[in-house]
Amino acid sequence: MKKKKKTGVIIGVVVVVLVIIAAVVAVLLTRGPKTGNSADKVYVEQVSTIMNQSSGISNQFMGVVESQDVLEVNKDSERTVKELAVEVGDEVSVGDVLFTYDTEDLQMQVSQAKLDMEGITNEISGYNTQIKELQAERDKAPEDQKLEYTTQIQTLQTTIKQSEYSKKSKQAEIDKLNKSIANSTVSSTIDGVVKSINESGTDNYGNAAAYITILATGDYRVKGTADETSIWSLTEGDPVIVRSRLDDSSWTGTISKVDTENTVTEQNNYSYDGGEGESASKYNFYVTLDSTDGLILGQHLYIEPDYGQTEVTEREGLWLYEYYIDMTEEEPFVWVANDKNRLKKVAVELGEYDENLCAYQILSGLSEEDYIACPMTGLYEGVTTVTSYEEVDYSAPLYNQEGEFSEDEMMYDTEMIYDDEMMYDTEMMYDTEMFDEESMTDEEMEGDQ
Image (cartoon, rainbow, N blue to C red):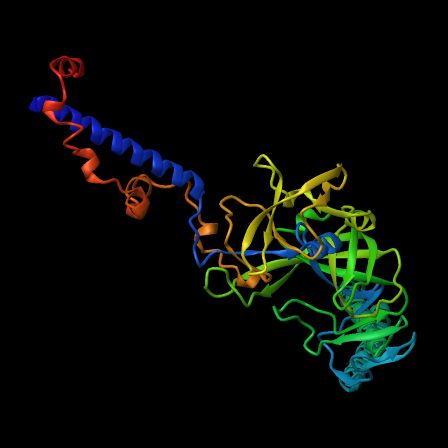
């Protein structure tokens, strides 16, 4: 009888364990891939901003308005500027003096070169006089001595040729010096505005740079800057949208040039890993605008690729790019920030789909005032939402997932397994009435065996 009672107890324990495991699995399934962490934060953006400016899914670059024609005036490194006639911001016209070189040293060089040339001329004259005298003496000398006179005459003639070459070289030097003196005044060849004056003639990295840069007045273009990762996504001829940083004004244009030959190196003042900033290579690209109305020279702008987002704003109703819509469940939903800045799932009703724009019409469930996040692996309801990328901690668990729950987490979560609601009365396991030997007949006991 004792053997039968022990068998019944074992069966009861196994049943209870199975029930507990089933309960744990059920809780894990409802718990989801994340349990929540105070360090987790996700960036959200207003729907109206996403659809009007597309900042949620496209690259956005910094740009500045500049002239289509830029005059860069270089300075002769071997000469000294005597007077600078302009300042940054001055308007200049064709022929206006920009600066003048100091010519005093050149004048002295010209004077010395002229003296040298005069000396060479006198030497040549003396050599010619000697030749005439030798020729006269040779005519009177005996035949056996004439060869010696002839040799002397030929030597002097060779010396004269060398002196005449030196004279020509000296004259070329004088002409060059006189030309430099004549060009000591440097004038503008375009109408424009003085953008910069670089006294050193080099940039911050020791490379040669223009002494004076002048932006021509007239049509404008926009110069953008992209890092070494993004620059390769830009191609000449690509349409872009240029947006004001101050208001809703915008312009359209096309990329006219992508300059990957010349890098612009800047020192970052921040680092994602907490270390010192690293040097990042950047490149310039240029945008030709369809219209420049309302633009100001030097104005700072945002540049973004034009993939048709302006068409979305012109459509009736609310449209949302499909990137923001999660289709992983039975009913499509969007991750929305609630009034407590916590993320929640909100089901949406989808309407028409535009293949060109990759966007759905939202019939219900979302408004332009809502703030939403892009779906990502591990996202969960209740995570804190922020409206600034700087507030996101990318070292938090949400952004450093290592897969599913570990075996230890699944099997030894004592808080789950031993929840008060899941505890079972040990009396159930050892109910004397249930396993009482006397309550079972011999036939029942034999059947259990």
